[in-house]
Image 1 (tube, rainbow, N blue to C red):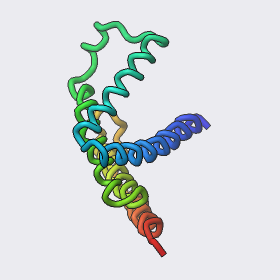
Image 2: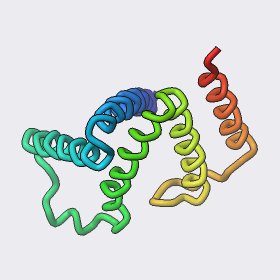
Image 3: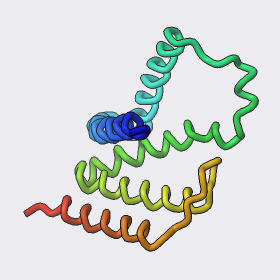
Image 4: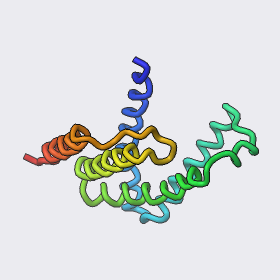
Length: 146
């Protein structure tokens, strides 16, 4: 039960990511990848700043306690936004999102296995690998056009 709310929020985030990728692909087709990424990030910045105005934020001094790698998310996001929009525009939502999910799950299993970025170490097992394979089978069924 303790995971119910986080799992609901994760599922809603996945839903939003699918809409975001599709919407960004439409903008990319009109203005190109670079201008689309800038527009998306400027919009995100404005929404983030508005959120801080209403909720407050951490003291600036607290930022120095964050590990260096925690600041790489914004840089990664530029590649993610551009890559997702480009891929979905070329493949369609189902195939593009399937590839994204495969990449995410495979990476997640490896991050857990090595306990990277302060994660609890959860070793790779044959059950976890079977889960990845079953996801591949499910993705194959989902992208079938017949």
